[in-house]
Image (spheres, rainbow, N blue to C red):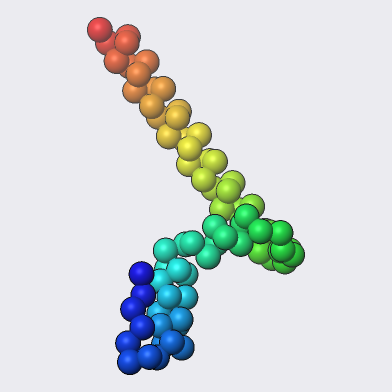
Length: 74
């Protein structure tokens, strides 16, 4: 929520845009709408998705190892 002070609508819009950018809402809205994505942006997004997938797989492996050790240790 953004308050308009002294009738200064332009300043309120700037504050709202800054809040939306910092919270990530802008990216969610862009992701859901159809628009052209530059190749460099596609590469960055693909790399981020790859790194998230790798981290998730590594975490899964570590958890499996821990569970196996617990089962065998009992």
